[in-house]
Image (tube, rainbow, N blue to C red):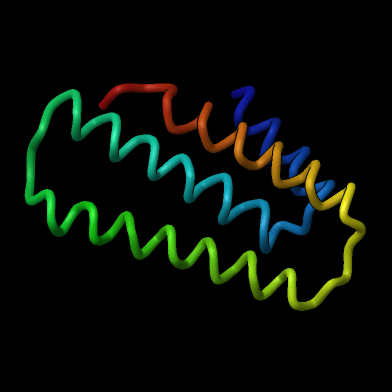
Length: 96
């Protein structure tokens, strides 16, 4: 629940088009890596290729938003920090 509140706070400081992909994408990364190393199952090549593609999508999203240059640096960095914290908390919450 705290991770969801952080995601909402990140959306206030950073536009949802950047805060949401960073937070949810990082949560996906944490969850996949944690689950795979705790109980390896499935094809690791396909699994980590998919995770790599999600990471590339997050980076491209951040670069596209940076190219717009529409927000102050302080407000944007606070939003990114909140998004990263949200992703780590959300990704490490439950072990499935």
